Image 1 (cartoon, helix red, strand yellow):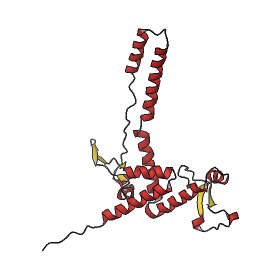
Image 2 (cartoon, rainbow, N blue to C red):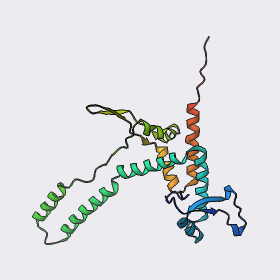
Image 3 (cartoon, rainbow, N blue to C red):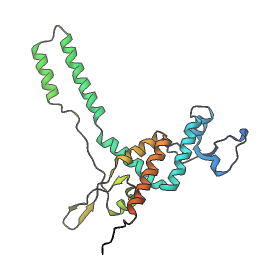
Image 4 (tube, rainbow, N blue to C red):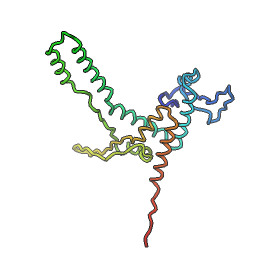
Length: 221
């Protein structure tokens, strides 16, 4: 994939030299990054700054040391899924704005009757505002295993085990959710914030290693 975290092109990838060849940059791995032809061209034309390219390179190096690419893709998918399914605020604001604009227009008109005010109130009383669309992600046991690295590093909570039954089958599932660290990490990656990304990823990884170590308990005689 293109190294740009907001680009998902997987075809026509090109190798870009961080230090350009004309400026003496070599072709060693440390000086290379994969970009799609569009992002490569945008950088060459000056629309994508060098600082962004450096941030993407740093984040990819951190990923290779702490997370695999599949885990990162799963993290970003869960972030977009949760943001899309649990944030009705924009829809609610549009609903409220439309209601207030209609009410203000009625008040501004000298010809508005009490009947029109009542009709306005009755109309909006029958139109419920957008509510929280909490559609949790559900996964089976094999799906949960794909999230195990994110769970181990404290970026995802596996949730409690639930089950549903039919006439011939018991279906067990979990409802994993991103932790606050997981959400902040996804935001940092999408915003090319290498500093925050490094702090969060290194911190969560070190915390998971510490938690996994056996605790020494004092012995008594």
